[in-house]
Length: 268
Image (tube, rainbow, N blue to C red; front, side, top):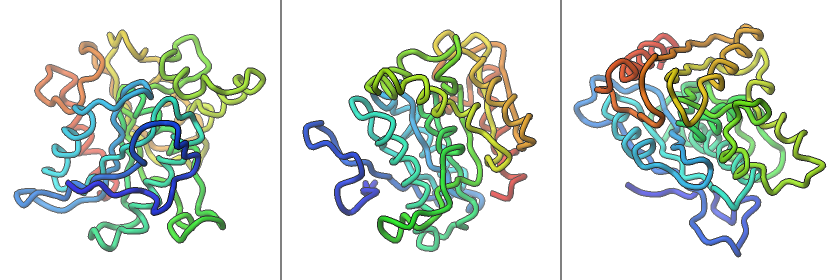
């Protein structure tokens, strides 16, 4: 699979002293045996904003491309990069896919963000902290970065509550000045940033997740409900954190079929 940089030049907030690749997307096109071509899914693997889990990235992209979706695996920056760079990466990924939609045979209004754990936070962040296009930058920056749907899976959501995930919060916001931390924790808590323009969401979690508290998904669903945003929330009684796309897992493995049903009703 070919890795495609999100920016032709050095990306915003690039730090030459930090080793690592520039942010990029890797397309996974629908397989030949897929029943039909569907919309696009940008996939954000988890890893507490310090790494990216392959079973929540490559495996998910392969699974959903076999279902007819055009998938783009997002390789976003992680710690020691902070919130400015990471937010820029997810916003740019949506712009990039929308700008190139014709070339991939996808509708520019059928672009979803999907993420797992910290990648679920990135997904929810992209769905609440977006713009309709910027006046500065290149042609891609003039395109809206609002996704048309969002799928945060067992997601980190809150940066302020007692059930916040400390490791993800530190990696994302830990370098912020002390006098800005409270402000940034609120700004990067998607359940506080949601409004009536937030795109529809599909959320799922397990009640016994002992890594990321299920209250994260519940708080996001409650915020969507308050703002009358369409959503679907599934909480399964059993299952550890980080199941990914293991559809054979008892109970919680149902999420993939439930998600396909839901996104099909959105016209994907």
